[in-house]
Image (cartoon, rainbow, N blue to C red; front, side, top):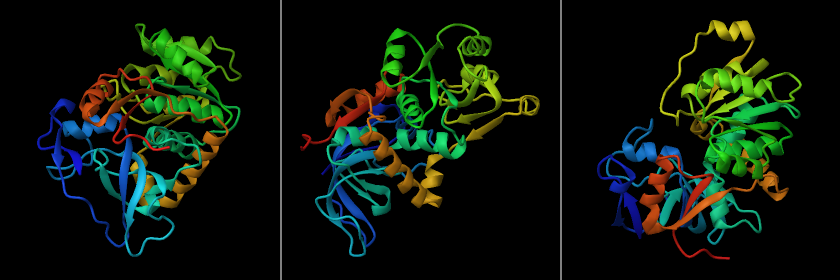
Amino acid sequence: MRGYRIHAFGEPSSLVIDQLDDLTPGDHEIVVDVEAVGLNFPDVLVVQGKYQFLQPLPFTPGKDLAGVVRSVGAEVQGVKPGDRVMSQVESGAFAEQVITAPERSFVLPEGMSFSEAAAMGLVYQTAYFSLVERAQLKPGETVLVGGAAGGIGLASVQVAKGLGATVIAGVRGEEEAAVARESGADFVIDLSGPNLRDSIREQVRALPLKKGGADVVIDPLGGDFFAGAIRALAWCGRLVVIGFAAGEIPTLKVNYLLVKNISVLGIQWSDYRDYTPERVVEAQQRLFELWRKGAVRPHIAQKVSFEELPDALTLVSQGKIRGKAVVTVRKERA
C-alpha cells in the first residue's frame, strides 16, 4: 500500500509517499481501506513537529478518515469486513490502509458519503464537546464563534445552531461571512479590523441580544480574538479555548473572571477519547442525528487527490481553506 511518511519534521511539502506493507490487525483492532481523509490544523503541527503527541520517526500522520473495513481481529465485535465507517486515530490516516480500534470507528448512516464522513470527524467532535461538555450550552443561549469559516469554526456554528443556540460568527471578509451564514449563523461580526480588544465587544453589544453579550465563546484562534471575546461575554459567560491558530497564546488576569463572574475552559478532545470513549460514541451518534435532520452538513471547500495532499495541507496551514479540505484516496464508492 501507499502511505505518506514523515522522515524529518518540516513543512507539508516535505511529506513523501512510501510503499508500505499491507496491515494486519491485532486481536482487538480493525484494518480499514481508506477512501477519504479529512485535513486538520493539528495535522500541520504534527508534520512540523510542534504537536503535543508525536510518534517516533518515521511515521504516517493523519487523524480523520473514512473507508471500508478490510479485516478485523479475532476478538472484535460489532464491526465486520465490508462495513462503511469513519474513524479518528492519533496517526496513520494519510495512507491507503490504517489500523484503528472498533470503539473509535462508527458505521456511517445511509446516504453519507466518504468525503462527508472524513470531513465530519475531529472538528465536529471537538465542537460538540466544547459546546455540550465544557460550556454546558443551553437552548436559547448565544454563542460567539471565532474563525467561524474554518473547520472547527463552521462545525461549531452548525452544531450550536442545531442545538438551539443563537450564533454569532466572527469572520474576516465577505467571503467568509457568506460561508458562515450558509452554515446557519444568525449574525456576523468583522475580525479583520484593528483593535479587536474593543471592536469585538462593541460589535457584539450592538446586536439585539437578550443579555447584551455572548453566553458562550468558542475560541480556536487565541491572540487578539481572545482579548476581545472575553470582554464580549455576558454575565456567567463561558469561553472555551480550543487552539491558537492566530499564532499567539494569550494571557489573562484572573481577577477579571471574578469581576465578571465568567469562566475560561480548555478542551483536549483526545482526553475524552482515551478516558471516556463511551461519551465519544454518544457524541458521534448525536452528531449523526443532527446530520440526518440537516443541521450538520460539512462544508467541503476543496477535494483533492492523494498525490495533492501536501499542497492542500499547505493551504490549511495558511488559513486559506473555508471549511474542510478532503483527500480522496481512492475513487469514491457509492
